[in-house]
Figure: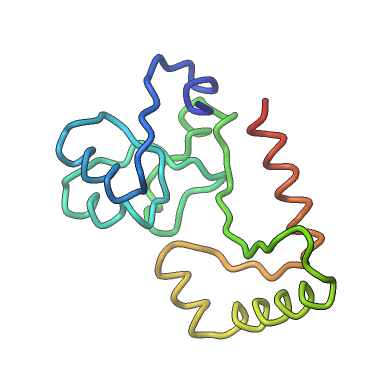
Length: 145
């Protein structure tokens, strides 16, 4: 829906039960486009079974440095930064929340995990639970518009 409104496209959103079925449908020619994580599409692009059109991030991705961003192609409102994080139920105690955050931050700092993320085109960021909560609120507001 964000792509439709920001790029002014007349397209139909077709929800799939996961990324794999959507990629299968794209490669089979059943659908025309997908908006999805580059790590899931890069191998198909290398094989020539699909073509990458634009990166939705604010900068060109490390997995495909020649792939122009949507902003570079005239759609600046589609400059998104994907993120992943660890979430827990709202009623979790502050002590458990801090223990989880500390364990996650220790893991993300390891060379092995950083290397695995980089191979997939991800950047690792060590943050606090409060900073991550603020990001989630900001993202929710953006998509609510």
